[in-house]
Length: 438
Image 1: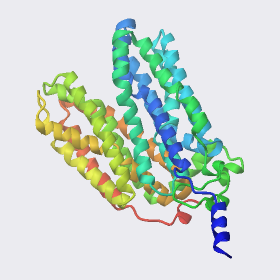
Image 2: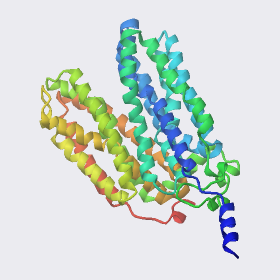
Image 3: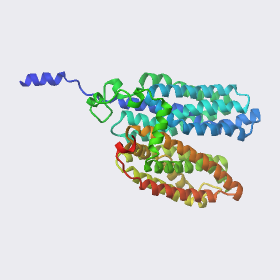
Image 4: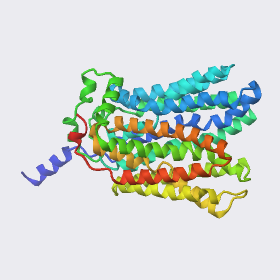
C-alpha cells in the first residue's frame, strides 16, 4: 500500500471523541444530586415556622422526618434494581418529581399526619432513589477508570446541594414564609428533570460507545441490559436476590457493620446531637450550628479527595484509616467542647468534616470488587445499614443524655465502635467475583 493510500485510510477512520459521553452523564448526575438535596437541609429550617403557625410539637414533626430517613435508606437497594431494570434516566426523573410533589404539597398541610405523606412518604421515596446508590450505579455503568474520583465527586454533590439550599431556604422562610421555602425546594428538584431527560443515558451502548477507560469495541460484547432484568425478573426480586446471595459472603457483613457504624457516628450522633451537646457546655446554639455547617464544607473536599485516593490506594486501608481517625477525634471531643470556639474544636470540625463521608468511595469500590456487576445493588443494602445505624445511634444518644445529663458516654462508645469498624474493614478479604454471587 502506498503512503497516499495509508493517509487516505487513516483519514477515513473517525477521530476519537475529545470528551467521552460518560463525563456529560456524570455532570448531569451531579446536577441531579444537587437538585435533589434541597429537602435534606429543610426540616431544621421549617420546623420552627410550622410550630409557630400550627402549634405542632417538634416530636410530631420529627416522626415524619424519621419516616423520611428510614425510606431514604431502605429505598436504596430497590432503586438500584429499578435502575437496572428500567434505566437510570427514568428512575432519576421519577425520583425528582416525587421530591418536587412532596415539597409542593407541603404548602397544603393542615395536620401533622399530612407531613407523613409529604415529608415522609413522597420525599422519602424520592430522596431514597437519589441516595448514594445513584452515584454508585452511574459510576459502575459509565466508568471503567477514574471510578473512585467520580464516585467521590457525585457523593459530594449531595453535601454541595445542602450548602446551596440551606441559606436560600432559611432566608426565604424568614422573609417570605415557610410555604415559599417549600416551593423553592420543589422548584429546585423539578427544574432538573428536563436536563435529566435530555442528557442522562442509561448505558454507554445507547450511544454506541464503551465505558470511559475501555475501548468502544467493548460495547459489542456487553448485553444491552442485565441478564436477570432481560428475563423479566422484578426489581424487588432482583434486590432481594442480591441481598440473599450477598449475605452468604463474610465480606458483606463486614461492610454492613462498618457502614452502620459510619451512619451512627455521623448522621445519628454528631449530626443530631452535636448542637445540644455543645449547648450543654454553654455554647450558643447558633454558634454550634455554624460549626456543624463548616463540617459540610470540608465534607465536600474530603469526599473528592477520598475518591481520588480510592483509585490509587487499597480501599481496605483507606477505610481502616478513616474509621480509626474518626474514633480518635470522638475520643477527644468531650474535652474540646466549651462555651466559646477554641482552636481545638475548630481542628475537630475540620478533621471530622474531611472524614464525614470519605468512607463512601472505598466502600463502593469494595462492593464492586467483591460482587462484580451487582455491586450497586449490594451497596444499596450496605447503605440501608448506614441509615439504620444512624437511627439507632440517634435514639441511644438521647437516652444517654436523659439518663446521665451529658453525652460523654455516647462519645466514648462511638469512639470504640470506630475502632471495631477500622479492624473489620482492614481485614476484609478478597474473593473472586465468580464465587461472590451466583
